[in-house]
Image (cartoon, rainbow, N blue to C red):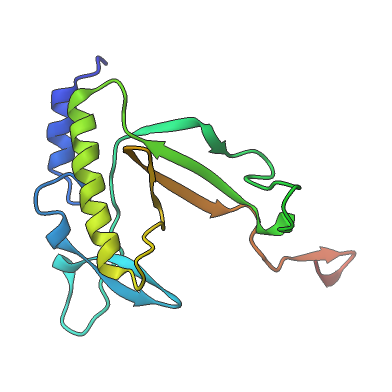
Length: 161
């Protein structure tokens, strides 16, 4: 299949979650969740019911210099943080090879920044959007380790690990 930027962009603009889509910002809102907030789809909200989380679509390039996906994630022994606190982390940046998608990236970053400002309680808005010079990047992370309880049978008896 041959890459067709025009068709790809047309398909993306039809998706509700595409952050560069006109009207995306008015279709999302924030909802309290535990100690934080979730970005939710406000168009599917029933009166009194919790809205489902929304999924955001952006098209960008992965920064190979900021890709921490190895067995220990972003752990650095030079810092005092324990290995258990390490995270898989990657940075997504503006697409370099496609002018249309670069334009959509810039629009999407403005929309995401507006959404981020709407929920911020301080003026420090460095959550997952980062300014690096004149460019905005997105930092995504997930824990490397998750606590879990596993049970297994040992010679007929139940053991906890």
